[in-house]
Figure 1 (cartoon, rainbow, N blue to C red):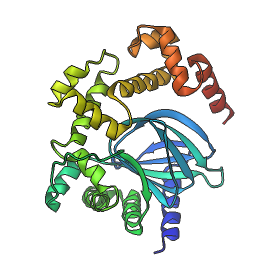
Figure 2: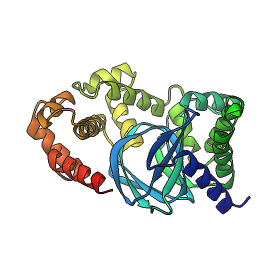
Figure 3: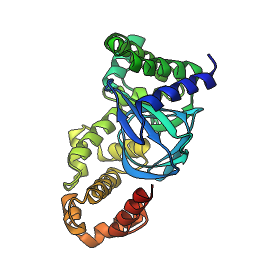
Length: 300
């Protein structure tokens, strides 16, 4: 089957199981479907370890100030949690943006690497762990067969794990396999960065001691900074700051307190510093930014 036909079939499946704009969980915990009918910005969030394939339309992910654009010919692969902002760049009511996101289980990746005879540790730099790559026919075919299982729920418990393993195998053998493998490898710099990120996510509102974090990871301070920046384009402190600001924006959008209260809850002692850093990241002070988002959402 030609790739155009496969994308069309995948679009049809996504459209049926994601009938309205938004993010849609499925009966397969590893698979989420997304549908949006208008070009425009979406709220910020976290990019999880995942493979994202657009069956129709296009999207831009912005992480650490860098843009990652993907469409029906390109997929996005993320192997670490990163604060991101996103924008739908190609969509309409008649041809909405439709995509599937398959979460990547790094433990499954590590087990598969062992079966493949891949080394579990590598110290050389790996570069960014979010990337856009050309969508191959084999990967699209595997993803389509996974999506088809939504119409056959009685087969999911048997076939979904096989297809997940097949997709992970293709990713490990592809152009971004080294990045993915490094994040799953036991004592590699990448896996230690992943552990650092887990700690930061759970303690983003607490003061950060780089010395204590590096000791916890059995790394030198310089090595932690080097590997962390290589993987995320940010220092640990910058990463924590983005976590705080993204969480603050989520709270404000949910009317979960005023600006001063939210600033304190995410770890800021100074509301004025919070407002300055918020404006620097999102382009406007908190209340103006939230009002703009709500007005745009209401217009849609």
